[in-house]
Image 1 (cartoon, rainbow, N blue to C red):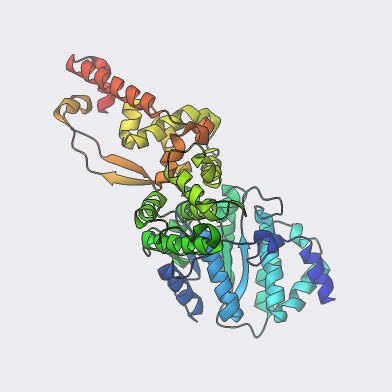
Image 2: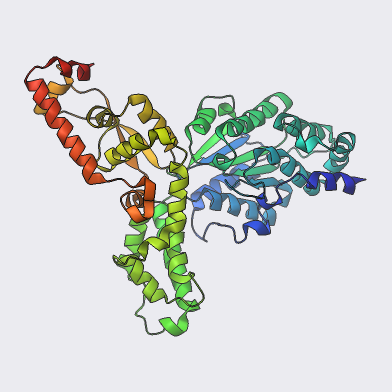
Length: 458
């Protein structure tokens, strides 16, 4: 009977979303000796029998290595602390195996819990015997019937709560589903004392950030920012040096006459700088140099990357697809404004300057910046206007300014390279020309005391 229940449940899960699924092979994971601070912080939380928080939110910009950390934690749990492993789900947008479907999350986790903890199996099976269609019900019903109720019925459940790993929450379906998942986890921990803990990794999309900072899950959560923990540059350099050495070994017949170390340290340093803390950039370089095909010449591949070779763009197709996917979420109606905002960031304008000098509506700017939250950093800056600009702002002087910068240098490179960015190409010269023209126009109006300038003083 138990096998029948599991079999029924197995028809509605996303098996490819589990950490050890062949569908994800080979999965990204941390290179030895890297991300040690983040891994230790999370591992200490997992092995703590009574942590202060039931949820850890691991967040960082696109391509910063969140999935690699989540994968490494899952493998570590399974290898050393198997009794603390509850299950995992690695979301992937656009996947045709259900990995982007939030409705499969709780049924997939319930399946793993039933396999991992046999004491749960009779209760999950009984529930499915009464209603075999439960895995097709709403997420609210699934988590309650397939996870919460069975867990609360087990009499000998461990006081050291197992860990559930959810990676790539931002790649799940849509923002409504993502917020609903967080709300359900929070509600069941608070109201039903759900005896599980959750490691959740995602980009800091504004709706996810708001949920963790303002909603009821806030008090339950230990946030870990990849921008603030560890030294990504040192880790990336260590990773590149080790991988290039492996490439030399793999192609020893070709590389035997190459002067070591290869590449030279200055090239490695250049790649580290270009990565800007972005592990996906570094891994893209490694794959292009040493793993493009079984017959590639690493020396030629490196030359393409370090010169203005027309084939250089092809090395970053994976990265380009990531950037294009994020930009595609912005409605077509805001496409022109998007290019103005991106151009404004490139020429180092503040939010207020983009509004005034490039003519982009403040509300539209806000929408675009929210959509780009995994690619940009917004900061408050002190700004003193030059005397010739004070006439524009009026006697009260400059308003408080908000600066913007890209997390990754490679994003700028993508935007200004038309063959790579295509419809998202930003013509910086045109943006700069518009900026300068508007300055002269506004200053001229202000000096002539034309009434139209008053709108820029409010």
